[in-house]
Amino acid sequence: MKRDIDWSKLGFHYTEPEYIVRSAYHEGAWEEPYATKDKYLHLHVSATCLQYGQEAFEGLKAFRGVDGKIRIFRWKENAKRMAKSAEGLFMEPVPEEIFGKAIHLALEKNIDLVPPYGTGATLYFRPLLIGTTPRLGVGPGRDFEFIVIPSPIGPYYPGKFHCTTFIVNRHVDRAAPLGTGQFKVGGNYASSFRATEAAHALGYDCLFLDAKHHRYIDECSAANFIGIKGNEYLTPRSSAILPSITNDSLMTLAKERGMKVTRRHIRLEELSEMSEGAACGTACVISPIDKVLDPEKGKTYLFGNEPGPVLSELYHALRDIQFGRAEDTHHWCEIVEN
Image (cartoon, rainbow, N blue to C red; front, side, top):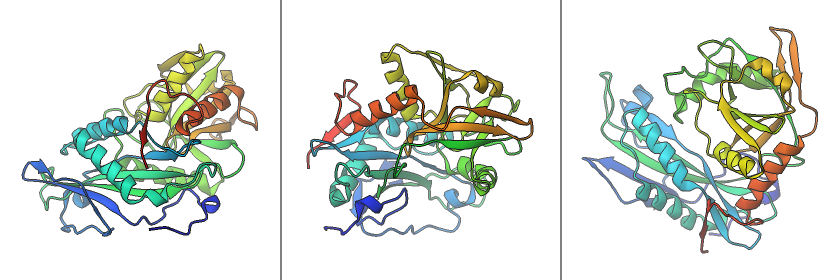
């Protein structure tokens, strides 16, 4: 069905698709994914996703390329990460075959929602996995539903690629080192809202420190941190940080450009030694930082009002691959005939 959408006015917000895709796990087997116009869940009030937070999700995109072809970016990595999240919450992992079929069916049934090339907009997929077993006693469920929700979204930066200010938070821990921080689960985001909403009220984004020492950089709101120090690409190593597929892609591109890539604990004070800093993730690819405020210590770390040259190059290099403007030597994109 053709949709009358002004692609230039799309923001990073939900737009109702015609179809979503669903697959249930019951009595030890996943059903074949199917498309439906029903956007509502029919859940028992005691479902484990509601009672005990047994839920995981993902985020990935399809791009209309310069050649008119549609490219899905690294969906198999999302399938692997969701499987790890499922295992972390004692859920039944979605097989890669089921995950892939659901993504492709969601694309096929909503093909008219893939934005035209040149708008900067993309088709975003939100795979969701929930526990549906009714249960009041504390424990995991044994029944699950996997859902893929497609939605066209506008570019993270509607205008110029620009910088964001972050403020350090020492009063809310996003995730514990041996908790669920390495999994993409809703609880991690809900637990961060107190800090992120307080930062947003001041006009900033929130920089979280590690929960154990409050000394090392953890996450930039809900994204990985990147720092550029000379010819070195720095990003935190922590069991409380979600392994970012975007960050992994950028590290590969940095290495190809002769940069040293290092994953380690990064002290907050090291920001003063870096020339560039950024958050990275599926939504923004790279969100450059202009400064980091640390009001409790009375310090401000400055990176400049414009995106730096290294991160700008990496940002455009990855976008060029996603939109088919550069050769995909790593075979990250799956081209879908349409």
